[in-house]
Length: 334
Image (cartoon, rainbow, N blue to C red; front, side, top):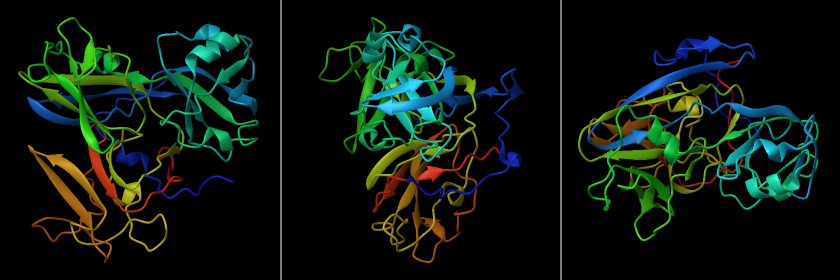
């Protein structure tokens, strides 16, 4: 069996003003959100989804291939230059996501989607799926990429031959911030590499920093609202995360509670306790979980655990002492 849902359900009353929803003929909630990007470093989250390429059921799973009900040549629907992922909507793997092997799926030319079993974006080991996908409802959609993020900007991003004079996007990789910068030729580069990273994926739930070197801009993301549970595995150490839903949250709303269990949040001092760090103004502010269950920031004894301080348009640093591979956020929109 898979996991236990640990997150509290939010109410629709918590929906922020930036979500402008309408109901389509398929009952998907769609909308948009905007974020002002200032000169300097900006924490960014992208909770809205690209449209489903297909939403169906998985008949079976064998090797690395998921048989899709009603599909005869699913690979013909894919673009070889793009990246896709499968999200599970029912059954014991509900909320889990798996990257597709696009080339292998196209080559198969049948009714299957081939998973990339080695992808670090997978929220559950593909080798352990066995029969857990049989009969489950699933959706497959494109990943958001650096190029798509750039298309959300109200003004063109600045590109040049160097990181220092270019607009850039930073990911946490290997515990460090790694910058990908806009080139004058329109592509995206990483220091030390000549490859074009325009198709670099921004996985669901992963936060980034957008750095503007001159004037600011506005990012407008449009898309669908997730109507599903959201698997969010936590590793020990530092992660840069973003919301799975376009809802502002409180720390308790994302499961920040102390405990002595193997996967619980650890209370302690600012040096030892688990924490959430947010950009407030131009500073990175740390909120540390204390042993008594309160969440305090330096110089302020107030308990912020139940305060709505986590913005859906932002990303946050989360530092944990204990990993939790089976963490799931329950769909806050029943």
